[in-house]
Image 1 (cartoon, rainbow, N blue to C red):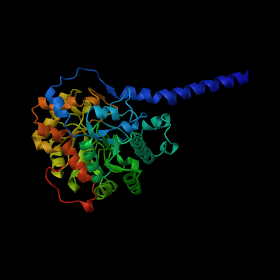
Image 2: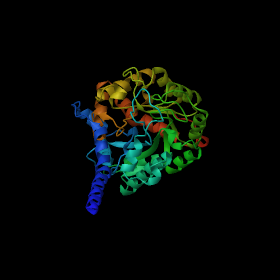
Image 3: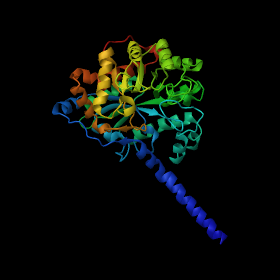
Image 4: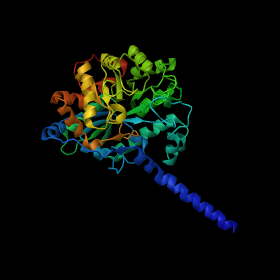
Length: 403
């Protein structure tokens, strides 16, 4: 009798484990990364023809966080290599998300609350060293991208310097079939440094070339727009900003508090980006940029990546994205406008990456010229990324308009 009860308990545990490890991660992702199914805007022949000639760069995606293949077309989420190819994406920045607070919201989160990512890491059976270390989670994401690059047989290429970017663009120009897609690694919140300067070197060596200082909570570098104190840079944060600029890592102020943004812009020696979000003028959400912050980013020569979800543009329509991009253009000029989708970042959007022609059409409808669209859809981001990956000591003088 006891043996039968023990076997029954073991069977129940096995079933529970199978559900947790086998089905829970996919179910969680499907429930968080959605396409809302609302009507798309009509796409003209002009938009399709133009879109096919664009060099498209997206400054932010969280796809590496989820347990699915980057190189096979998936049935959930917003992007993978086949869908990027269908959308004519030239270069995707993939972010490493390592921690988010329980009860996550845009207004106030404590870094001391339970972490949402740890159960996902365990359920996805990532290496045990990543269960309890944020640094190891980012290293795991870098290795995941490296594996995807190897398995893609040249269709996906990791980019870590300006020479790699040149090689990618040359390969795309010379492609007789589907051109390759490039991938750059970023970090969403440098709490993954675990307060150790040497971990920045580890991240650089793993291929990371961009990072935001904060995510949804205040950390040891700076205050978050969604944190408790929402303060500025700490001494460690200032040290890391300078070290990133020296090494050739782009500084991203997405999710930073207003004080953090102001202090980064005041000390920046290189272009600063806001990788994903919106603008207060068209969507008054606290994480979005004020006009003065937009002007400050432009003064550094950086770019502002506009997203596709409600928290960024107060809608999921591509027209809302285009209106935010138009505001940036009208305020500081077309050279500072870029894309920052936040695909697979627990967002609901109108279209996945295979249908990026929706943005091209919306920009045409807003009166953007073909040349403006080329810049906004990728050339501006290319300019900043190219220059940002060069170590500071090796940096040549800037060339206006160079991409």
